[in-house]
Image 1 (cartoon, rainbow, N blue to C red):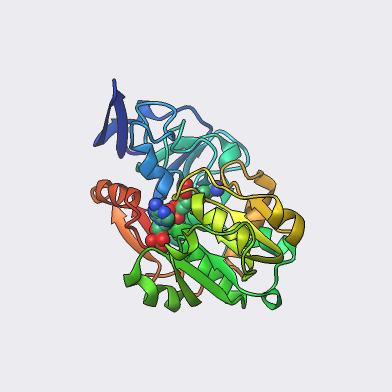
Image 2: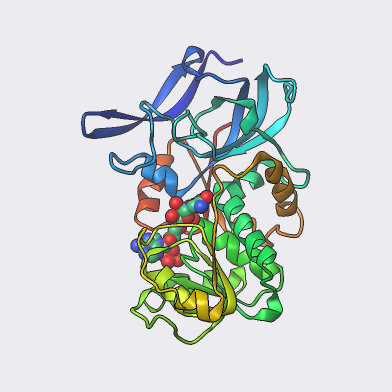
Length: 330
Ligand SMILES: NC(=O)c1ccc[n+]([C@@H]2O[C@H](COP(=O)([O-])OP(=O)(O)OC[C@H]3O[C@@H](n4cnc5c(N)ncnc54)[C@H](OP(=O)(O)O)[C@@H]3O)[C@@H](O)[C@H]2O)c1
């Protein structure tokens, strides 16, 4: 195994946070049973937050961010894995309290590791990454709630982002009539190419509203939160469900119990980080199968490497990234 590995490291001195590319020795690898030669990671909104002094994500310094990775096992002290296994990780403490995927090598607890599903390459696994896995969890939650294409349209908010793009494409593939909201007027054609049939502006879906307004949507996948979630509560059809995945528009929202009591609206919380291990391979298999977006290609994703990563991390914090960015390490 190489004596050194390259990584992007975030460090904090007082109130100042710095991000730099470093070459580290093997002795800098953290504790863990499984050492992985990282082929790909990806850029998620949370990785941007991990580079901010007050981002509320990094729980230790110095930290290698990167909340997901896919690669090949180089060494394992756990009998569940052997050298050469192809694996992936999303969530847990990766890139938050434990060195993450923005490095050529990673060492992690075996309990975090998922074997790569057949039918997806390592690169495709990270085209999905945490954002795609979260979109999959949200789609499954709507399905489990009984939201079907016959019940009416499903709205995806913050639709040009990572979770949003994959969610639009997954839902369209499953036969849903997909509405998409976005703040980017220039990206309407992109959203239509992913399968959205109606585009709403970000202003429309975050406007002040009555507690109950016209019931328009059978389901929603909301990765914006804030005023957008308030608006959604008022615009769901009878027994509609909102899968809440994100907070790019803020954490607080205002509503009343009326949508719950008079329309039987459900709010479904989605957490990918601590999703039980038993559920993960099952969902990854679906993501390689019926949930695989037709557009899981260069339409949704662009690629960068460790040298280009700093720029993407600052762009994602400004809401400027479209779709997914995979990070090529190997
Ligand atoms: N629950 C979980 O387990 C989980 C997992 C992954 C991600 N998340 C959360 O999901 C959210 C999206 O993550 P991501 O990786 O997809 O991020 P992303 O790629 O940056 O997408 C976020 C999108 O939100 C919209 N947006 C940005 N700023 C906004 C604002 N001020 N108000 C309203 N909309 C805004 C933009 O889309 P438009 O320009 O199209 O409107 C942007 O592209 C984040 O909050 C993230 O923390 C949660």
